Structures are given as C-alpha cells and as structure tokens.
Length: 250
Image (cartoon, rainbow, N blue to C red; front, top):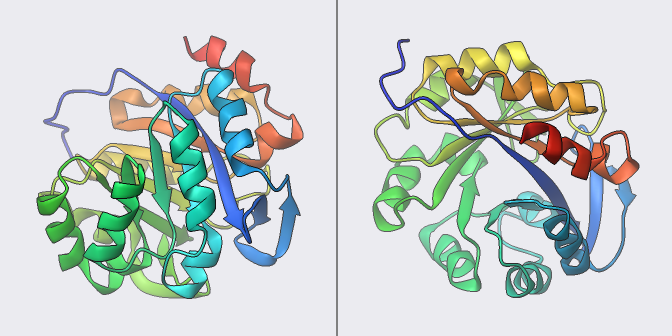
C-alpha cells in the first residue's frame, strides 16, 4: 500500500524483560520449559537498561500469557514504580478491567495478543477507552498467526489480522516470528517489512535480533513503517552491546 501517514523518523531499540515466577527470564521459541533465568530482581534489571539509555521497556508476563490473566503483578508494579521511561506490557490481558488495572499500575501501554484474534472488538473498545495506550501483538509462524502461548497456529495471516485494526487507533503492532524468538538467528526482516507496508500502523520487530547489524538493518526500514525493535537474549548474553547499539542508532 502507499503509506499516507507521516513517515517514521524515529526508531527505538527496546530491551525486553520476560517474567516467570517473579524472575527475569528468556525463552527459546516461546517454550516455557526452555527458560534461561537472568535473576530474581526484574526492577533492578529494568533500571540497568534505563541507565544505559533505553527509552522504553518491553515487559511480558509469561505466566499470565498461559494463565489468561496477569500473574506477575508485584514484579510489574516494582518495575513501573522505579522507572521513568515508559513500559509496555503484554501477557494474559483478556478484558477491559485487566487492561485498566495494568494502566493504573503505571504501565504506559498494553499489548493485546491472543485476545486480538478471538475478540477483535475488544481492541476497538480498548482503543476508544484508552487512546494511544493499546498495541497489538501478532505472533506468527510462516506468516500465520499463533495464539495461546504460541501453542496453536491459526489459519489467519498476520497481514489479514493487522488490517482489521487499521481504523482503531492502535499505537503499534509488535510482530514476532516465533521460529526466531530467543534463537539469536537474525530477525525476519523481509516478512516484517511486508507487514509494515501492508498497514499504516507502525510496526515493531521482535524475534531473532542477534547483533548490531540486525538492529541497523531494521532501522533502515523506518520509511516502511518500522518504528523499533525488541531485543532480549542478545543483550543479556552480550552478542549486542546495548550502549554501543544505542550510539550507532543516534
């Protein structure tokens, strides 16, 4: 499509904190049984990334994603209380009350994932009630949407789902290629850019970021609608120096 909105001029590299049992972890391809533990103080980890220049933090309540309701509230609250940068949160948010509860806790914007497939009307209503504070998370395998902690792959394409929200006021789409998530194998830039070009909603790349070259390759597509990239395992294991990456982007 021809993008009629203002072209993206900014690009954020966003550190990720995934919460499991109150700990900061990273999964491989979304498998809860394949988690690497990075400590039991998520708020301290969040402050670390903020101190290195992060402008936003991406938090996922993994237990909540599987339970269908928020499950790491104390950790989320601790992160929000201590940070001055905005926090975006996904995982287990299934209704307006849950969304409102997380926003009241200090989360700047929430991410609706599986529920956006099952109940797209909720996305529309949430955007109406909480303008500029709703994102949609689209997790896909070979271009098809996966839900329920990535256990189920649907017959809905990522582009088809994204287009449903064109007129709702969604702040961003977080697009994750689940085959690459946590694998340090490089992002699926081609598929993500194709999605970004198909809609007018800004798109954030997620899954597979492994090195600074991956970050700059994503940032090169600002004008296609790519507004950021989420990085997790790479910055925890040192294949990306976060400070150096931020300097490169500037």
